[in-house]
Amino acid sequence: MAEIIKMPRLSDTMTDGVVAKWHKKIGDVIQEGDLLADIETDKATMEFESFQEGVLLYIGVQENETAQVDAILAIVGQKGEDVDALLQPKTTNNDTQETIKNTPIEEPIDTIKVKEEQKPAEQLVSSRIKISPLAKKIATGKNIDMTTIKGSGDGGRIIKRDLDNLSKDSNLYSNHSDSLEGKKVAISQIRKTIANRLSESKFSAPHFYLNIEVKMDALINSRKELNEKNDIKISFNDIVVKAVSMAIKKHPVINSSWIDPHIQFHQNINIGVAVSVENGLLVPVIKNADIKSLSAISNETNLFVQKAKDNKLQPADWEGNTFTISNLGMFGIDDFTAIINSPDSCILAVGAIKVRPVVESGQIVSANIMRLTLSCDHRVVDGVTGAQFLNTLKNMLESPLMMFC
Image 1: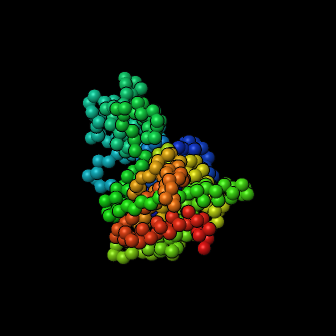
Image 2 (image 1 turned 90 degrees about the vertical axis):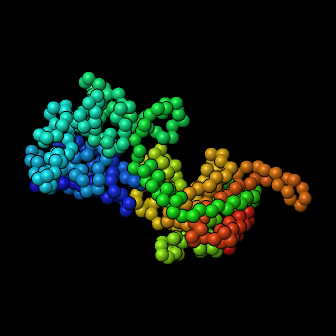
Image 3 (image 1 turned 180 degrees about the vertical axis):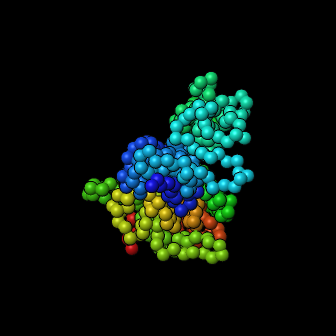
């Protein structure tokens, strides 16, 4: 008997998903555990395996198409089995919804099955725009201005391929800014989530910012000696993660969240590390960072970075953060302010290590200086608390042995 496969909820905040890629086509035999599709969620693009067995009879969500959680993703059953009954919408007599919402292939407009009262798809957009039903649904779901797209189909008709080509040109981080002039690009699920969460954080949490400079010469020498004697290479960011976790132990208010009408103090110290990917920013979490060695933190961070680049991060990788670090030092940024990553009460922005003049014993000398900026939620963390935490962190970085005391 045919079974419906629904759009899965792959994260706790996911409301809809985009099929980034189908790994099976209609007519293929599906075994339990087979990789069915890549689903783009609000957090990452994840592999979706089938829990059913049979022949793939119907695909309800095409590649690059958006669908809500629990929408019909596909139907699996016996070869030749009729799936029409499963596709009948449960609606009232007054509902003018299409009986078949999705088509498994891109068909000419005059072959699409629609109710008698429905107008052709072109007329639903504009009398001057020709677009296939599938392309229209993709464009509408991704808020793409169809008047800016040149169709490559018959008579200039916009088809799915045109939207695919648009998507390929939609790298928001491209250095070739001239190639994006005048274009409107689809917003990824990750980018939507970044926009929503950071807007909520910025406009609901009263931010204030604290800056401090750290002399890094002793740490540079310690790291050099450590890496000469260790197979695992430790980065400055690994050391910052460890130092932050140890400083938090001395200032537990930093490790808390505003959950109206109370403040939640967290038992574990879980450090989120911001990682840039093509479509936005991901924040995998180093859990219990205070009890992990530098080597363990380095291994875990490198694994997360690779998984993020390969779209292999799982929900467990990004859940549970209690503090976040954002490091732009490797890009030559001296200092910056970061928006708090909810539900944290603080985020640390880490700048580049640069040689600067400092005064020591009345003499001007050069030193390696790193600037740190702590963004705090004033509902939870007061100025004095944030300042004390930053000074503890500064002392640990300037005298590395202190983080192990």
